[in-house]
Image (cartoon, rainbow, N blue to C red; front, side, top):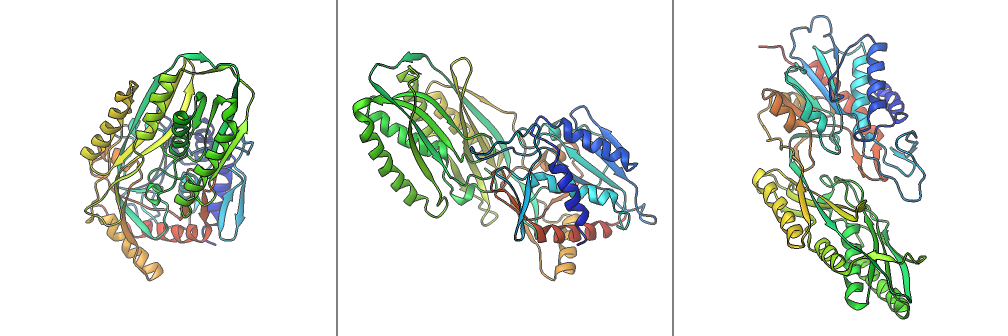
Length: 481
């Protein structure tokens, strides 16, 4: 297998913890890698790393190519799995043609991109012009590495982003995005005597990437939990003591729970109501989430709860907030144009409940509109609202020179045409164009499924094809004008 070094480096990377915003260990690994292999290695103030490799003799006049991947990974695990993402290695295993991790995200997004670039840097049998390998930090939770990239750090004419997830597909555009956060401040109140405390859980959902998987219509645990809680609030004298759902801004919420208190006399009715609700929801999502599960467990009394007014406004807001696809592209068939993700609900110190959402669109005005829609829902409920800086989309260029080279290469190698697409997920490419407006770019990669969830898996044969495709592209980069 020609991609053997790619897998070797990927296994090394899996031993290095690299949560977003905590990439010190992977940065040190890459710096040491560059030193060990005698590569010119630069690190900027943000932690972005650039490694340079001279051209193969006779190819010095080719255009300079940058291979780009991000160093952080989404750290998601199943609730019954013990794993410390700051210290523990990812435990990989192979099942048929797929590589997976034991109860956690695999980190192939974007560890396989890093591994592929490292394999190129150390393979002296390859033919290529001048190479730069750019490894950016914190792509998953803010794109801060790409935002911080300084003009003049990179000198490439062409950038190959190695962060896509469907082998045989070449991406030439992506959505822009923005995060919208609402916060409720509550008063703590006493729960009357004679109340029964129960924990309501929603679990077993597939979740997934809030860009790449949003069109699949998968259930959102925050929405389902709130549907039931709103019902319980209207039917019983319910107190909400705790609520927690989802984790990451760019992942569809897979699990959520609430601790509630109801009159002792109502506990059997509540269980019956949950069973009926569960049957309805299981029928709704029988195709997209066949393993959905609702659990009701008694809990010790806490005596404290969120005040009823905040409870009402909070639950009504979560139910009112949009989630999922808002509009499909009118230019590119099958492409999601605009979406929003109700990512997480968390109780924070200081009696604050924080709701994180993210909006994406390939049209800037549509992105602003859906963010304003979310803001309006928060403001109507009396929540405070903030937005992130956001990131730009990447407008497709169907006449790109590197696209023509890549499509010709794929046809030559595999006797079939690569699919040229835009992607609804966010990529760093739009930010690169802000700093380097003449860059010619495409994004591609091997086949990954279930990213941003513990179901993440990587198709092993697709890595070999990706490697062959990438190295053939490098061989056919044109000379500088």
